[in-house]
Image 1 (cartoon, rainbow, N blue to C red):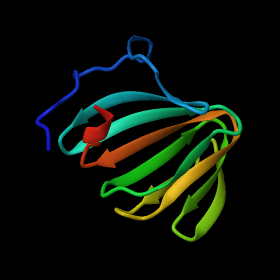
Image 2 (cartoon, rainbow, N blue to C red; image 1 turned 180 degrees about the horizontal axis):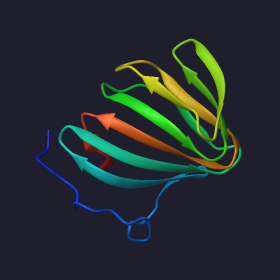
Image 3 (cartoon, rainbow, N blue to C red; image 1 turned 90 degrees about the vertical axis):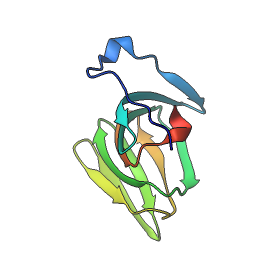
Image 4 (cartoon, rainbow, N blue to C red; image 1 turned 180 degrees about the vertical axis):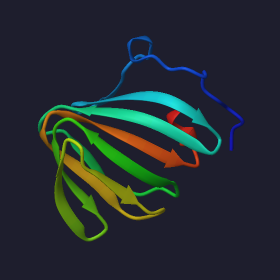
Amino acid sequence: MSKAASNIFQFENEIEWEDQGNGIQRQVFGYNDQIMLVKAKFEKGAIGTLHQHPHTQVTYVRGGAFEATIGSEIRVIKDGDGFYVPPNVLHGVVCLEAGTLVDAFTPMRDDFI
C-alpha cells in the first residue's frame, strides 16, 4: 500500500475530471492510506459495470437517479440517497438521470492514483 496523501484542501475547479469512458468521469478528492473520497459524474445511460473490490465503500447521490445493484438487491436511488458496499460484494449502477455519485473508500484505492 502506498504512503500517499492528498493536499489538505481540495477545490472542485482545480481538480481535473478524468475521463473513464462511456459517459463517466472521475475526480479524486482527499485521501491517505486509510480513506479516499471520489466523485463520479455519469451521463444518462452510462453504466458503472458490475465489479467488486476489497475496499469498503459508502456512496452518496449528489444529483441524478441510478439503478444500483449491490449483491442480489436492485434499488433505484436518487439525489440525497446513498448506499453501503461491504468488501468483495459485487455492485454497479445504471444512470437513469445524469448525476454524480460521491464515493468514500477504506482503505484508499491505490488504483485511482
